[in-house]
Image 1 (cartoon, rainbow, N blue to C red):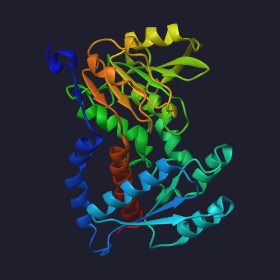
Image 2 (image 1 turned 90 degrees about the horizontal axis):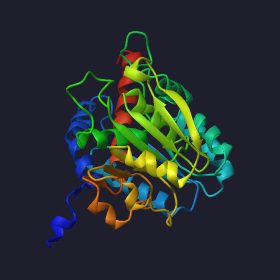
Image 3 (image 1 turned 180 degrees about the horizontal axis):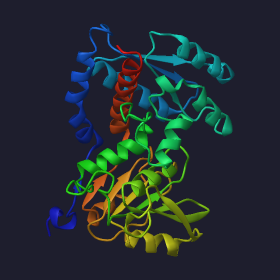
Length: 323
């Protein structure tokens, strides 16, 4: 039996998806030459020793430089001084975008730091205004629908990957393009998992949101009758309930930050699309015998979305100030 018979699907690399946005971004950066002749400046703050954050910083620098941005990594040896460093960058007119490599403290203090970053420079889309808009399915910051709201970059990256994989049905109206789709999201962090589940449900999907405590269902109601998602508790977490949800779904998205966690391949029905946004691979190689499409990592798409967010912030700022 040939290997293709054993592995009927395709593995899609994040770089393949990210490359689709390169030309668009380079053109937009070029159009800013009159106001930003040296290119927009993104500042990344690193106050931890996480190897994944170091790798992410390296990728970000390479992506920036290849597309006409400037990138500056600022290492903060004592994390207690990070807040002051962020405030300084907020006040610096030469800085167009700010990002922080989390976790810093690994607790609620990180959520506080997310709000310290100026909303006008928050390329990661973590400001409470952006989150509130996301959860309420509001896509603009103003009543004239001119200033587009910013979406958190990793959930947005997963959405763009799903669009690339044709999971979104472009024959349907925008906002309803996941109607009829069922998705599992294994992660309910406030940074990625919960907002991702809300985004997908706001676009019409039924989403099973999984964490160690319970499993919830995010929907916009029967026939998409609501304008934003609603949440229903399905019960405490159990392997049986997880298996049932997975076998009912077209898409399985994982983000468990553990090297040892693997979703059992037997939970995956034939033809499912599988996407992993964790820095660890949550799928075993045998996923390729079940999945029609498998995306093992999303990091490079996340970086591209971060740069698109930065351009949107600059565009919003120019509209506000009539530049």
